[in-house]
Length: 278
Image (cartoon, rainbow, N blue to C red; front, top):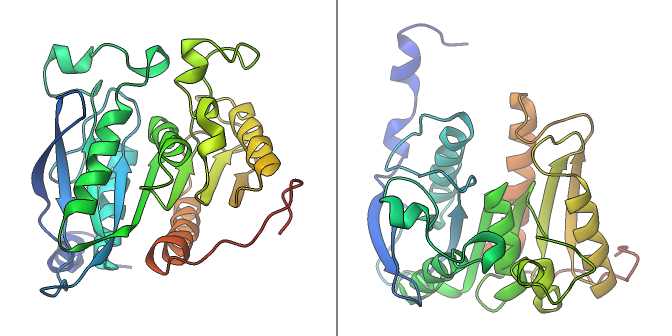
């Protein structure tokens, strides 16, 4: 193991790309700041698969470099890793995040009041589809916590854009499940569950203190009932963001394998019965 001052010198900085600031505009005119990671080995005329990343919070902001918070430091590294594996990656700083003024942070109709921030995610997905170096039929999405919420929204509302996703400890329902007419319910992924067609990788610790584990149980029941393909990893006695490094390695290895199969290779997922078996 390398330790001390030699550790930084051994870190493969030359394998990383310099992320680019890219602006997109949502359907309602809101401008959004994004970071774009373009693979170094991309050849002229080539079309690559792409991945959207959505941060959690939502009171967060991704940066054009390594983050000062633990999970987002990891997430930035994962986005670099995905780019090194050949994906064009876009990290979306959607509305209700920090760093772009109070009106952006307190934007109306977000969350259970209309999920307006999801428009910013769609804008990121459609921007990637419009790029000459992206295959518009191979765009995926991933995120944790509120990012998992938005990943679930994307798969429920726009399986036509997002062909697969990785939802880590996401929120899937606002409000009361028995009141399906409420704005809160209709603002949630569960409120659009009948549109969910794309395969999804799901993960959560069953001792999550931030997002009730029942959110995952309820979503899996709904996906099973509709025959939607999912893969589920439950980590016993773990919390919202694992404190054990080896578990992150396992989660991202599984996630990468899933994205490779269903985004990169665009495999047809196995048929699933209503009891969740293949």
